[in-house]
Length: 410
Image (cartoon, rainbow, N blue to C red; front, side, top):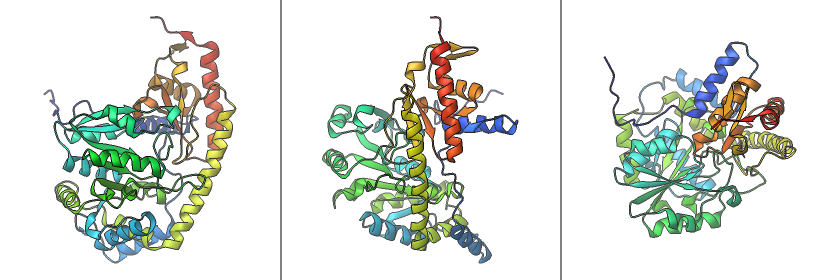
């Protein structure tokens, strides 16, 4: 019998980041020499004190269902964190714990928007934003940014993009894949523009703790005492505490919205893993240990960032902006398109990444996944030796295309 899939998933395709990582793992399992710089996750273990808290929770029998919105101590601790670290005043009831930030974003979009609504998504964007918007029945309206502006949007950009149907804007700072970070003055201008037009801001702040050079992190919800009325804050534990597989995220926003998200969650996933929540609570409560984790992680990522920039700057053909946050280098690759080398026709970022993986044993992520086919992303969430080897392979592969590549016949 032919299976007719629902229109609910439309043209949904698997995450390109996960697909590249899966192919790279297959090659590694076959014994092939592959350097994987595609992963969007810290390569550090979860801090032992968090693991110990989870173990103790299991021993105490904390393995049953919890309230759909999360255990009360964790919601209270997150509200305290937002107040003390971000200057945001939320009651615990205005916080919901989710199975990662992805679910938090989905819940908010699904509860706020529907058919006929347009959501502005700046490009480059994190790979899942367009799919999450479509699940809500809304329409994505991409707003392309440029390297010249540091991949930032402005109020004047927004003025040209909004229509009568625009109801939301997704912001991600620090940004994946570009590493750009918005300063307070730009966020204030964007928020005022959205406030005046009753546009919601969905603020993905998952890379909050990974910002370089002492630049402060600012949430759009903190630019004004009125901002929390139309900003939904999204964050989680995966990047800041290397808790990727624990699947703990959260959202904070107006009480009516959080209650709606809780109702939705109660009928879909119910609660986030109970054991993971107790581990996350330790991350929130053990402040000195957590600060040390963040300090050590940022110190290591800073070393890696400086190292990859030093290597990249020696290659004149690589064009990029210096990342201010996160752990990615997003570089232009369109100049290599239209080449043929051996069995490879390099026509776009996908075929370029396939070429680099198969010929050089280097796994990167095509820019097409981020809405920018003229770019490619490399992750430096890896040891210095892997970064050095990966950059050597990248340069070798690109040089081979530049020197030996033949135009693809029209």
